[in-house]
Length: 144
Image (cartoon, rainbow, N blue to C red; front, side, top):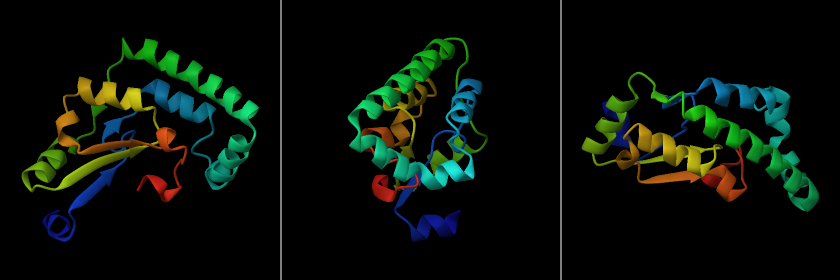
């Protein structure tokens, strides 16, 4: 890691599955949304652009996401997120080396805020960027 610390000043990480273990409900909602199937990832940007042009579809899509988000909120009362092994040590290394760190995620901003707060890691991040806020979902590089 020392070589990376010497070479870069900014480290951008994903949240779900990278720094934290995705809870069962997050994995289930991603499966339902087909987010990890290769054909869906390939068409994801085109689908969002199409939805954006038809505001009726965007509202329908937002309603569906609101349902999943409220389901997650209820579920998270009972199941708390966890950091993956080594995540805290890496974040401490970045902070001690005076490196900037950011999260770039497709997750809802309020959920990331809640989870980083529950895990007491908010102070490790200089910025949290949600692609939902940008309306530019991964793999669109706009968040970077």
